[in-house]
Image (cartoon, rainbow, N blue to C red; front, top):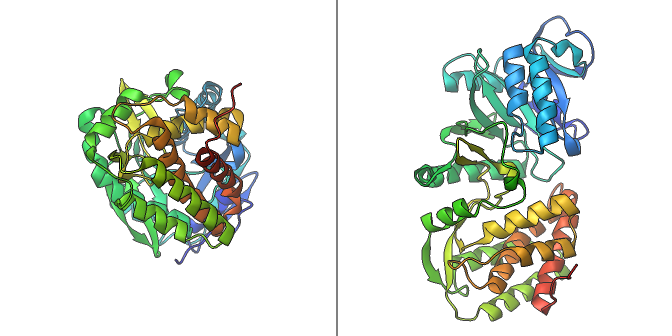
Length: 400
């Protein structure tokens, strides 16, 4: 891979530098230097996240307004105020800026202008510090209209995720027919040997339902499960089990490998020869990966999508993530959230489904924790392995 992030202490500037190879990208305060051909204002976010927004008022205000529309009301309100200020041309009040000067040929912007066949610009967002952190671009035309989003695989984990989402989008395109809006594939390919995915915009309203931040959208989840439903199958011998075994085989630590293997055998013993309903799951269905617009649910971030998996795991994932954001990631918090997830008649028995979900999450987290940047997820991985071992031992969730 030709481009790699170089400054983890300033991932936003680092991402912009990667998008303009050969140009000088500088973060600072005050006026832009002579020869600058692109200037961004920097708006910080929670947990080390942030967004670089072009200074053009029409683009800047739209970029801020669209940023995490499904977030907490206070954050949405603060960003709405910032959007109005930028729309009025008050961006000069934001002194934290990034400027791009020097050669611009061969930049990612050149590629995106060719993809959309018009002059476009973009904002750049980096999320919180995670092993799969990647720059996400929202693309705008000269009038400030959002034309799409792009994801760039600058690290090996991000490259894998970009490839996975590129493969997933054609499979989920039919969800529009059941009331779930999803991004459409616009363009995918490589740029400087780095995978790039360009997607259409999923409409989202500025204000979201308060209930969606705490309660899963059960109606849409059931429609999703039905849409991808497959014949029930035994876990033993299933393609899903082989995928789990392959993931756990990537774990280098002997003790971790032994613990996961024991948990997996316990899951198979409890499931027995009982057929388990199979379907698909989004894999990361959370409040921050969805939003409503005119009564229709939009859903994005499809890099974890998989078919042929036990039905109903998205519901558990949603509740677990809502709980851990609110109360912290601890074994008791995760157990209570899993116990609270309601059973669905189309899903396997609650106990077996819980074991399946924990197997799937451990197969995701533990190999990542072993790889580059794995320290960012190591603590969370250990929590979910602990919960899986408690489930195997029959330890009930704490009553509080």
